[in-house]
Amino acid sequence: MSLVSEFKAFINRGNVLDLAVAVVIGAAFGKIVTAMVDGIIMPVVGMAMGGVDFSQLFVALDGNDYANLAAAQAAAAPVITYGAFIQTIIDFLLIAFVIFLVIKAYNRMNPPPEAVAAAPAEEVLLLREIRDSLKRPGL
Image 1: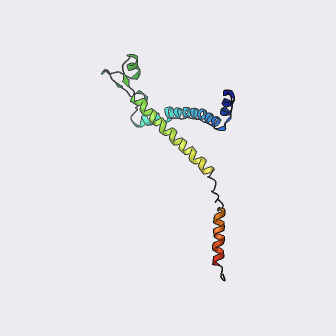
Image 2: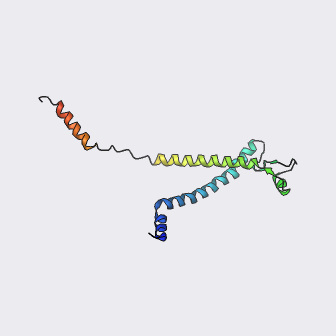
């Protein structure tokens, strides 16, 4: 089989296309959740915490004090932006929670098929027949 025909067979598999669709939809879904977190949830959390903007939380490693993160970055100061880390953790938790809810709703709408009992093996049927014949009176 040539390389081109192997590649065609690989691409034509349903799993590859399903995975590609899932990645694209997942990326778009991540943008939606990030916009929701940045625009709706984090301002409320910041207001509840006294007006804190998590994206502006940082520690300057050079020992100087800066008015804000932009000033520290303009001075080329090494900074640890722990606020961005907190924001990313909240994004992750919200994305995971929403995916959990979607999967839970999907599973509720599409219950797993009931397991069909496998037919007993021929040997089992024969042994049952022998057992039943031995139980009959008069033998």
